[in-house]
Structure formats: structure tokens, C-alpha cells
Length: 340
Ligand code: TRP
Image (tube, rainbow, N blue to C red; front, top):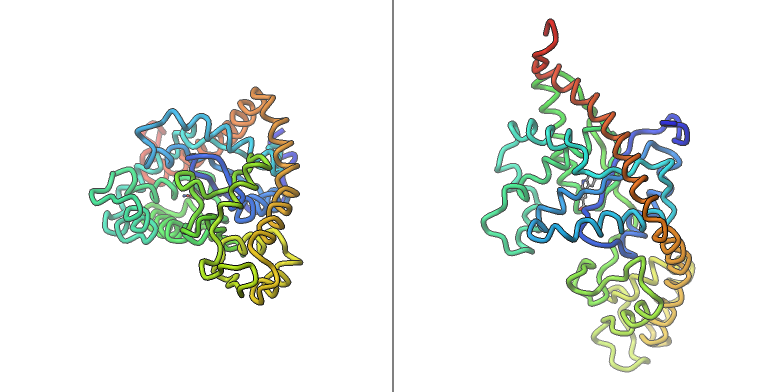
């Protein structure tokens, strides 16, 4: 069964999601749609990074179960096919934790402290004394990527420092112990990250500024109604500034053919915010309606979700065990073999 449905000749590709909540339309245009394409061309691994989620959610682990299973539903709803893509639960692959420990011997604290994404996230959360696991999560992410010797890692811009750190770890490991791992390359999507509807940067659950893949039509309409637009615009006929408008970003993402016209109409006061928002609500409903329907169908079959997680994780473990055998041999830790 293994490999039958997967694309022959492709690369091994791994990417992941921190399981801190449901996925939203920003994920859809920023990564999910691309994964649906990648699964046909490559041996695609999708890692549900529940251990990484714990770096910030350790005090409420009871939310992980719903996030893990909910994200699988999101995957299936958008067209990810578990026959082609291998869906893996991070915490159920202990070899990832093992690799993390070995890598952590030769990664310095300063190199982690200087990682720009770690810095930005620490500042955002108001950390001054960093949790050890949080500071070290780029090492664990290097283990995520290397346990299966992935060569291509689709990520958002903000993840580039982690991929660079992974490349350094791979080079250092290979130099210290002999070549075991390939250096992975990042694959950054063309689509810029969709901002939150309140105009304050990223979509996030706590700000209630995101449109989730399982939103109802009413929720979408309501969130758009409340969305911030160009603050300089008081009357519908005032010229708008679409480049700073969060709602216009949705026009760009979901109205490929018409966004330029809307841009012109908004800039010259020929379309008001209300009409623009109604238009976006319509466009989103077209995209979300089939996703919502598929999600409900899959949600009615919880055993299938468990089976998908089990099958994907088992395949990953088989690969991880073989990698660990090579790692132990390279590190001269194969004590039980007759000769080293
Ligand atoms: N840190 C990634 C994010 O927040 C998620 C992630 C975990 C990941 N492990 C990974 C991404 C491995 C790529 C490869 O988006």
C-alpha cells in the first residue's frame, strides 16, 4: 500500500501547522491551496505540531485534541487527500524528540536568542525570561524537517529564520558525524499573508479578527461588517486608499479578475465600503460553501480521522526509525552492533 498513490519522482516535502486552533482563510490562500497542488507532485508530509503548540499552550493542553482533529478536518475539507499526503502527529513520533536532544548539544543559546522570529514572538508575548522549550523550538523544528530527510519546506516568510537554522544544524551534523541529512530549501508562497480584519496585523483567535474555514455565512457577513477599512474615508464617495485597507486585501486574494477594477473604483470614490464588503462576503461564500459542506461530511465520521492520523503517523515512524539507525551509526552510538 505504501507509496502506491504518491507521486513518483517528486521530492520529499514537509510542512506543518502548530495545533493552536482552527485554520482560517489566510491559511487557505497562504498555504493550503498550495499543498493541494504539492500532494500531486511530491511525497508530501503534513506535520501536526502539537509539541510546538505546547511551547505557548502548556497551561491548557486540553485544547490540543480539538485542534489536532479540527485541523485534519480542515485539511480534508480543502482537498488534501490522505492517500497522497502523509498526515503526522508530532508527539507520536518520539524520534523527533530524540533528534531534538542530539541537535541541542551543538546549537548555542545565542544563535537561538538572535533568531528574529523567536525575538518577535517573545516580544509579542511579553516574555523576558524565555521558556527553555520556547527558545529551543527551532531545534525541534529542525528535527521535524530532518526525521524524514525532507528537501523542500513550504513556509511563510516568518519561518525563514527557522529554515536557515535547520540548514545550519544539518551542515554541522554532517560535518561532525558524517553525511546523513540533505540540506532542505524553503519554498515561500507568492501570496502575501492576509491580515486580520481589524487592521492590526496577523489573524488571530484572541483578536477575533479571522475568518475560519468552518465559519457560517452569518459569521462571515458579521465579521466583514465590523471590519476596519480606510479610516480616512467618511462618506462612500470619499476617495479610498485600498493599499492600506484590510478588506481590499481580501479582494486581492479572492477576486483575482476584479480586484483591479475595485481598486480604481475605491480610489475614486465610486464604490463605498459597504458595497465592497458585500462583494467580498459573496466571494468568500463561494469559496467557503463547498469547504463547509465537506467539513461537515468528514466531521460525521470521527473514526476516519483517527485512522488517518494512525496511518500517517505509522508511515512517518517507519521512516524516522531508519533515520535514527543512521544517526546512531554516524554518532558511533551503535553499541549493540558487533563492530562499530
Ligand atoms: N512553526 C511553523 C508555523 O508556525 C509550524 C511548523 C512546525 C513547521 N514544524 C514545522 C513548518 C516544520 C515547517 C516545517 O507555521
